[in-house]
Length: 115
Image: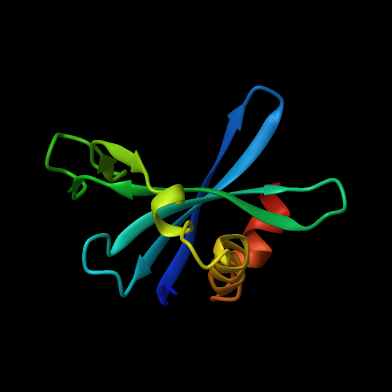
């Protein structure tokens, strides 16, 4: 199970008619210490973790003439890699990871307001 060290709400993305909240997550996973987690609000009001992306590269603000925003070059969907396995606990692990993220700081509040 991944341990979340830090999480911060970043923005809302719209895909079709669905809104997704993007959260930057720092973990204890050596091969993917920085992840992007995407949440949506279900019909019953619960937040659901739907996708986790690994950032392949991260450029600090200003390196490409962008003064106010970090630039994320490429991402890879690692949801299945993180939450699949022979023990059939993948769904529960995914749920627990999502709960860890929204319990940090003001992430839940930001997602609730944005979605």
